Length: 456
Image (cartoon, rainbow, N blue to C red; front, side, top):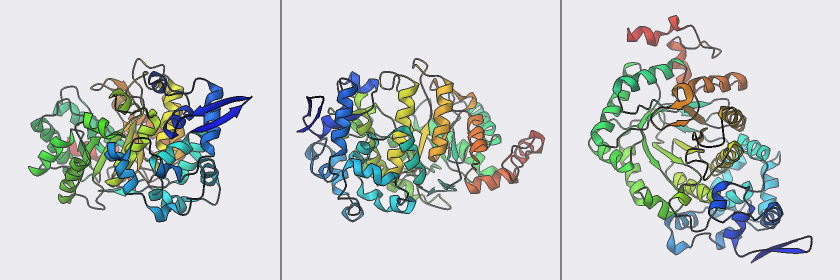
């Protein structure tokens, strides 16, 4: 039992799970689930109480029982006690102060990452203002490699997302060329297929691989099919660079996606065996999003942000090239408006980076949410300051297959320009060789593009 008194009123919190839920900044999903604080005063009482909880408590009190959930077992069994020893004496509030201190630098944060559990990281995020989340995330550096190098300081990447409602190869190819001409696609050229049939996915994989090989593009490709489809295609010798899967923070929620840890391990090893990377071997691409466990009725009374961060334990195990929180995609039932979407994205990015993950964010919202592109401009800029590894690049920012609003090729150009950021270094060199950008990263006139000349 945890408790705190404000104005002679005693607030009681039955366990750590309840305390984490009550301490969360308000969002519609937690209210839908009956997990949020009843008002501002109770929320503050919970946050004050949470600040005094020793970090060691999170190793002894699990939010989902060890015997009922393989994600809990993963978190506890693979916890690095040596890495944890540097901060094991701290409370949640003291961890916040330590993270924000000037003495805590990138090297220090990298060293302690294996000693942090998702619940510890979720807890400290609940005590932080948006600027705190940005300040600490900006200190974290997580670098991954496949055919290029993603996550270096001063660099910012994009996933070129050439979706098409019928998987028309001509439409997909046109969007890919369009994105490349705007300097997009260094994180990955990744397609959400309209159908998960192995034949359709194979066609898209071969299309992208042919384009990549023809123009010697130093990037990686991915069709975001179900992991079982990808595994089948790997075994058939298809040109699979990255293996994709959506993941969540509970065993039951992952089961609703048709996956578990052993299946992901099998696919990970199979994709590794292809040895298609040239500068590294990070071969996994995961997507997550607050509300996924709740929407599957698989949250076990845990607030949606803590469930989300638990998914990062799954991702961390498989050393991914990319992790992407699709922050506003589920809808206003979970994140009601622009304010909630912005807060959730900053939380996810902070928590993922602190746990040692290469975090990107799909800066997005559904058309029935109380949000607009001005909200997304604000979030995009904040994420750039926070050191986000990548965002999406979608023609016109409007995904014609998934029917949601995201970020465009132009949005990435804006962020690189105002913050002085560059694409992945190998990709930047390719852009210069193709006459797409100059040495300062400025876009060159279309007539100078070698890529277009090659297509004629």
